[in-house]
Length: 137
Image (cartoon, rainbow, N blue to C red):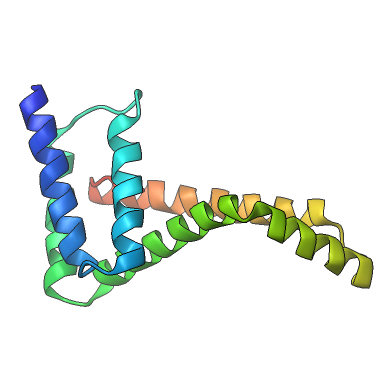
């Protein structure tokens, strides 16, 4: 495990991810943010086999618009919405307050539902990663 191997893994994964999303504008920035976060995580460990399997998964997403492509597309869609929701949190709160005035719902309940949805999604991705021996976020 050398620094050179880690740099090459980052570059290969980034290149494969860009090809998989066909360089589309919102997806390429989401890919960049997710990959940076993954490689900057202090608790992460480098595993050559996991990187190889992940690249194989991405290559199959590049070649055929099958299950792999749909999984990747949905992962990026959820990641983009998570990031976008943080940027526009004040708009959501304002809408939630107006909705609670109209029909009696509380914004706290809506936030709990949103948090539990993301927990379930994260657990599903973790189980898929463990089963396939890959690393997706």
